[in-house]
Image (cartoon, rainbow, N blue to C red; front, side, top):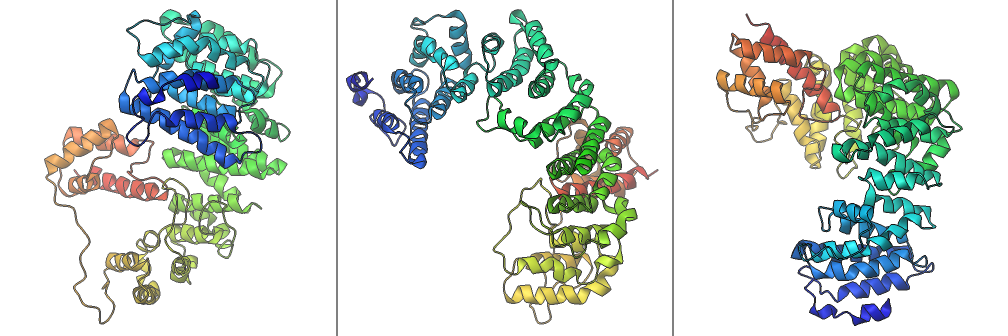
Length: 572
């Protein structure tokens, strides 16, 4: 290899992007080849990252036919096949990136070369990279028989969309983690295959055999893989899925061997459950019943992880479908006393976003006001969410010290991070703005908090002024220069424009700018045209969140929009 590497005139090759010469490629290859088990892991990772960046930059800079990738490919294969090479799966990942359609040589072309066994040059019409891939493919195929199952599993990405090679590997593979990845790839590959080359019948036979086999992990994998060919397969298998996925003895085995072709780390059992629930969503009632059963079994056998998984999936279902509320409400209420902090945290958050529907559980929420339990990944406490839930219900037990509880976490923090679609502590304005009926009781505390925020240029000045404005109060402190700038108001909209916007939203489901203004315009300017009334009626019945947001703001905006729709539909 070193003689061949030195024999290449790298200086004569085209530049690798704008910052590097082609001569950097052999330098990185030498760094990788010289690394061994004593080399620091971060140095090895850096070498692979540099190699990837160099080859990708070369391809993007030069386009099809660039020399550097084609010349480097044989040396990459040499290193990938050498068991002494450190972190070989990372090198296989680089090969996979080079094979991607988005980057260079076509993955489909690679698969075809592998199917035909053609190792010769594909002709002048092919790019240099394609020709290099065809010449190297017989050697690359040796990765599928490599002694390291991690290398074999990583190499599956090269044939992930080809049922023929996948079936060939399935019949000879013995390692369970690789077999799981193969099964999960077979279903989608067969579903996407051109009808003229269909091997769907053979794939179905493999999946059916695994489904009725003795290995529980492969049985679950077969169901999920079969969903690409038969979406209702998961519905039929849900009793088995529930039994296997809630078995505490099997849980560690799932997490040791459940790999997908395109993921280098094993999936958690919660990831597998999430995929099952996603596939069950074609029948929303079945999906919610499955999640409820997860929570019940988790409580019965004392499996906190299973209960966390159930409450997470309940959140996802409720975020997408208002109809899930009927099943999620008792589920969340039953978990308010759970011994696990994370479960109580998310259960209280669910109760809060459900709003007035949770009123019959107000006593349970009030019992949690002093609960300091926290979630591992989200800010706030169980008590914060219980208090917010009580404000949404209109329960006065939430009011004492409410403002102090809301502003205290902001006093020493330097900003706040969160995922827009995740459960999280609500913003101060979102809690207080709807409480205008209690303004007399809360006003002194809000003004005191505003004075404190102004004096130290805190994060909440704008939120607190917004709350005062929404309550019809002066947002300025005594002595502050005025006037207070009015919040931005959208420009007025003509009724015809509002009708067109709402009808379009009902048809395509895509959020349109100033859509809430359109709903308000329709509610103020009747009568409705038949097309507009039909669109509004359809939106009112839609089992989805009518919102541009994620997370809890989606619930709040959905409530506001549905109220606007009801006002518009009440017009003559």
